[in-house]
Structures are given as structure tokens and as C-alpha cells.
Length: 113
Length: 113
Image 1 (cartoon, helix red, strand yellow):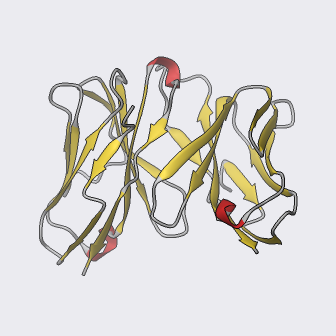
Image 2: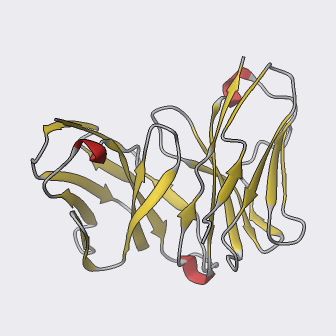
């Protein structure tokens, strides 16, 4: 079983719909990242969370540390939001300040005009 | 700020040939990561540098892969000789102390034919 699980794997929605992507993890973490990857391959960091909720434009990310769960929401979705959204965690308890990220396999989002 | 810069963006080579990728991290970021991402999967760490020291290279296939970060800034990742299974996106990322500002480059898409 992967340490980071995302759902759904694929999501197709109409423009304007409210989108939710979920991430569950099974390890103790110091931070959780939500990343966006477009077909060209480059990754853009959307949020880094250790507690609570963050908002940037139409994107909202929440995390519940006790339940080991995070969600990424997109309001008023647009075709340009079509991408792969990846959840990644930094495990707690390493000897180094900068640990590697452990990634989910991503959610492929397609927004239809 | 330029972000994490990688080159080339795309590379197609024949099997058994050598190939090298280059990464310039964000100025001041002491930690540099090389990830490999196979199609439909999340990135996996190959090597992590703290300044010029490789502190985690446990996932680097050392028989054919090598990396260096001589002055603690730019880094190169080399494969020699390349195999068909090395086709993937190779991502570079950097971060400052304690993982702040975790930023990915656009990646190099390698195709081995």
C-alpha cells in the first residue's frame, strides 16, 4: 500500500464546477504539498501545508493532521485548470531539515468547456 | 526570480549512448534534489544534495547513473550508458533550510530509442 493515496485517479468535470481532490497518508508528516503538473512535465508548487487551510485565488487546500487527510478544492473550474494534481508529503522525524518528498500518483483533472 | 532552471527540456537518444542533464537551483537554496518520474507515476527521489554533499543517494542506480554538485550550486545528472527503461521525466528541485520554498524545475523528458 502506498504511503500517500489520492482520489480520484481521474476526474472529468464541466467548466464552472466545484472540484475536490483528496489525499490520505499513513505516515507522520511535517508538511504536505499540493503540486500541479502540466503535460510538458514541469511541476508547479501550489501549496505547502502543515495545518489548517490556505487559499490562493480559486484554489483552497485544507489539511486534517489527526485524520491524516488533505483536500484540494478548485472553485469555478476552468479548462486551463486541466492538469495532474499531485499530493506529496515530507515525513516527520528525519535527521535532516530537508527531507525528500513522498508522492501520490496524482489525479488527472480534465475540465470540459 | 528565474526559478529552478533545467536543460535540455527534451532529449532523444539511442540506447547505450550517454546523456547529461543540468540543473540550476534557486539562488540561496542549499538543498537540491533529482527526481525521476515514470509515465503515470509520482516522482521518485534519485539523489539529494545538501550544499555539495550527497546525503541521500540510496535510490540512484550507481552502475550507470552519476551526479555531481561541485560548488554547491549547479548540478548535473548523467546516465552512461542509457537503457530503454530510463525513458522518463527527470525533475530537479531545490529548497532552503527546513524545506522552505520547495520549487521544481520544468523537467527534462528523456526518450531512449
